[in-house]
Image (cartoon, rainbow, N blue to C red; front, side, top):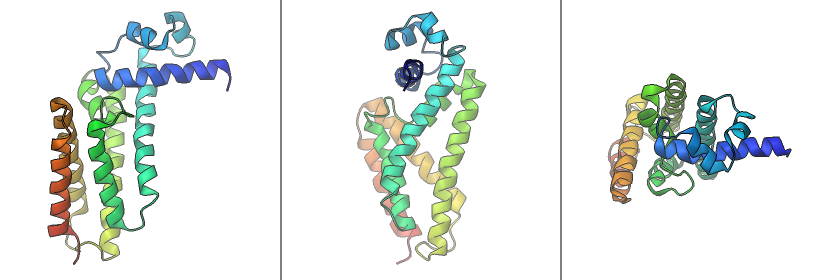
Amino acid sequence: MSKGIHTRERIIERSADLFNSRGYDGCSMHDIMKATGLKKGGIYNHFKNKDEIALEAFDYNLHKMISRFRIRLDKDKTAKEKLLSVIEVMGSLANDDILFGGCPIFNTAIKSAPTHPGLRARAKSAMNMLVTYVEIKIKEGINNKEFNPDLNPNKLANMVIMTLEGAVVMSRIYDNSQPANTAISYIKDYLNDKVYRH
């Protein structure tokens, strides 16, 4: 890896934690300089402006989050196993040391989207991807006769994601994993009662 590429990646990596925890407006170029140990000119050698860094940082955080899902989902065979993995990985974001600050999709939507249309579009696209994936797994479960046939896949997928996102936020606020654990337990009970075929 060339020195230039290495420096660019270091800027993205160090900035990713800042943007995920503080949001776009809460992260200044001075903060990025301090985190990377580079002067402004050194940063601008690789990026046009803070906007470009913020977008790259979001993509970096999203990739880390997707990697967490892939590691777990690669071991799963059934739609039920995959749905449970998504639920548990989402819930684990409440106390995740790898993704500093929690879920990058939610954080970006709340902290950055109101003032940054580009980040808003990125967050919306990522959320759509997540909901669509869960919806597809639910449809697979119905087709495989693992799940009840009368389900509304889109409504169920949205309910699962919304419940988990809210629980992760509460866990972050209270610095306690209990809200996320409660949400996971509630969703699992709901799936057992209403979704799985017995």
